[in-house]
Image (tube, rainbow, N blue to C red):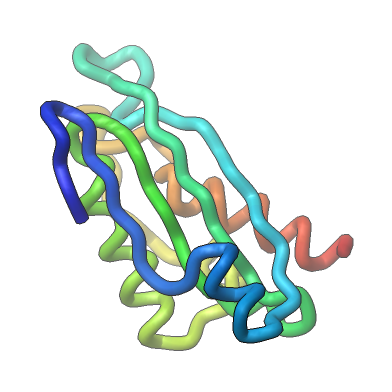
Length: 122
């Protein structure tokens, strides 16, 4: 996790080059969202990139870039990695919601849903 001026950058688990190096077959998804409810003052763009193993759907890694509140979301992915969760299992996580802190669907959950769909169809 790092911060450069007001830009937050965080990652946990494997990057694409790490997964390739160890011979994993994986799917990657990238989503664009906001740090809080879009209508709430201070909502800022956020990008979440997620890697999931093709055969199992197991979460392999997450990278997040955005403004205030973006980097700390990597903790969700770190817990999921530690628990060896699949992206499908992640879609059932019940994360807190309030407009000043998150959109209705947290960006990490949106990425997990997209990754689960891609792993199922791929």
